Image (cartoon, rainbow over all chains, first blue to last red; front, side, top):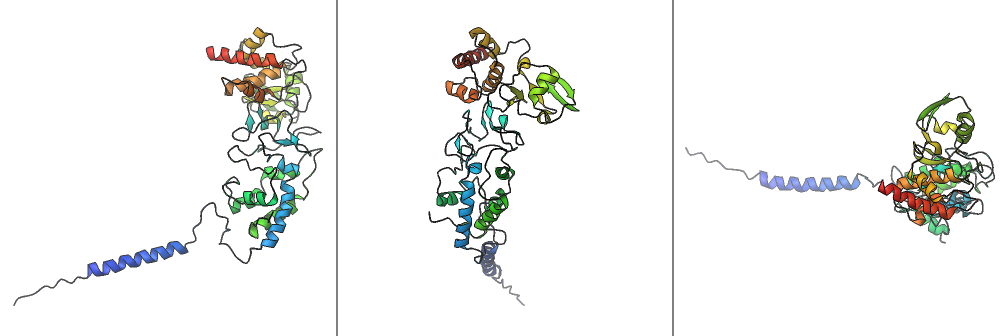
Length: 214
Length: 153
């Protein structure tokens, strides 16, 4: 008796189907994984469209704007490379320069005079361990900006010191930002209390980071 | 007790940690080369080095310099032979001399970071040091000369 062996062509046909299925499933998995870039302006858990409110967001930013354009903030966010000084925002006496890293130059570095804490008395240097300007490659200028320009700048990852949404929220809690409300003798406080500023800041961000029309 | 190193010597003191370094240097330790000009960090007469960086000792608290290295004009060199000191003597820069310790200490930071400074670099570095006698041009010339002495040595 002759025995015939028939080879079944099983593997090539089903392998091809299996490969196609794997690619499709993999693509679906990647698209639904929810991975995000570090520059994302979404909060953890994804953007909730119900939370976005352009009217509330813009109203909140207009409050934030009054603080950011006050001397306590704008003096260290100048348009030029010399910080501003005083409630009238004159050029800082002795003309210290920004330098590449924002910490000044040579014997005129910021913390040569600005100590870790305020120096007591009138006309003495206010202090904070992080006293500095923004670096020259990202000046983060406030001076001369309209509300719209400033909002667009602050929410732009490439122009705001590379801060994503979470980092923007955290920035209002930064020690150097808080120093604006511990300004030392003879200096006017910002137009909002710190808690009111943080509330407006958070609202602007959480309601969608909308920029005013002007 | 607070320990600090001044001109490579270690000192211990029980002075209030909030005392400006200037008074510790002058009154406690007896190093009177560093001068009091304004007391509010606006004249530069009190400049000393803290870990190599210029600070204004009239507003720098003792607590900030604890366990740190401080250098005053007396300690800038062993034998008054720092290039700046040589240049200052050669060009007879000082008039009353009151601001000059601060001028030299600020210039020393400049020359350490920039061996060939331009006039603009000198202005940027020394703008916070005021001279009531108006020796600014001689200071500028002396810094250029010191840079040359430094390059040759």
